[in-house]
Length: 282
Length: 352
Image (tube, rainbow over all chains, first blue to last red; front, side, top):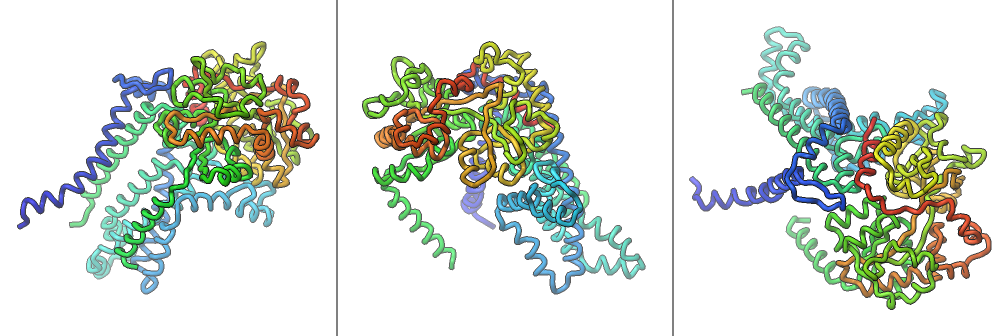
């Protein structure tokens, strides 16, 4: 069909891309994670397992990782709760307004992440929109402190940012469900809830899994939201990595954490892919 | 617009941009306030150049940036007394030819004679300003200035305190625990058990901390938005908040505080050393130093700056009693176990 020259010409650029921008950096990261920093703050290329031992020795690292996973799980759950009904409504009930609504969901994706994070700051702050309103209507007498600089603010912002990422794959999978299957279910006398439960939901599981993976992985590795809105108790694992690569100047330890994160994410992707295959409609 | 036309325009823009960069440029990596237009613009006009400034949030950030390979990106840096020595020893900055900085001899003798930036008989930095890390407080929330750093731990101020994302917060806790007595330098040489105690003390502080600030602008905003009522800060922020008519107070509590002597240095990799020398000379001239204090509220290294000040301005800068003022400031020193200090501070930051 295609000549060999054509085939290699078409595979080389992506191969080059993957090797240069993916494999090499990861290999470097892997190497760094076995090196160390001398007291004079110079990275020494001496192979050892000290960094990984450090991760197990200092209880802070697993604790922060667990907290990050908790935050990511909350974000995923909330984004699913918001994204699924929205996608379902758009796919089934929106009719002619479908395209308009679709655009409205997607447009925020074009707004810079930073702008959206700062927007939440002005809404949630002590002098912010929400606290001013609450005090105006005498619902509270003092500004509510937990709204900003807290894990709550991080979960809220990340949910806002990643809900479209959950919505899109779910919407796509709902759109791909053949109408005849839904009609068959109805013709056979299933009430709407049962049709949803036994036909639509199972067929949309691949979309749900894809969306949930997006939301979980992206929020797990997020560092801007906790940096800007997290406050002293909302630090996530990426903030620790940023600090290790920055002010603390401990690239090896930072690499070790990053590598563990990478393994975690790859395992997760592997798992969800297996699940998606099991649920996919064929 | 078609994509081809867009690409063409983009290419044209890049080429034009490349040609326009003929004006010499000077890249600074300095503390906030050290590249204010009020004095930098005159320098740009005089030497027909452009000054680009990046700001650092802590001494460790500066060291990490230089170590991490950006040393050649910057021409001039402004390390403080804590890392100036190690930066000079590491060969990251060039030894200075003092004959190119005529105003150097006008600087306070005591600052010039410090061994901080002298190594192998050469001088690596020009001291140009110094100051404390004072306690800043919202005067509308405090009847009188807080007498002690202990006020940060007062349950009354839960979620109303901010501290700096810098080892200075570690030093402060060590002072509160009394480790600075009898020898103030001890806070820069804490033992492991002492560091553990400092860590516990800082963990106790966490419920009171609203946000750990990492840039001067961030702390100014935290005060303005009434997120915090007291913090460790810099005189720069006091100055900025007063200009905004914010009721800000500044004090050095009974335990005293840490402070810094900032030096200008030229990076070894700088390709604009001539222009960099002119900048150093300009920055330590008496007139620039006066403008610098107007912006920052820091104490000038060139006593000649006082010639341009009113009696009130001199009093505000404590120039009438410098020796007495310095007794309350423990100037940052090289911390031999800096990595350990950073580890403790990182653990405090990451804790729940």
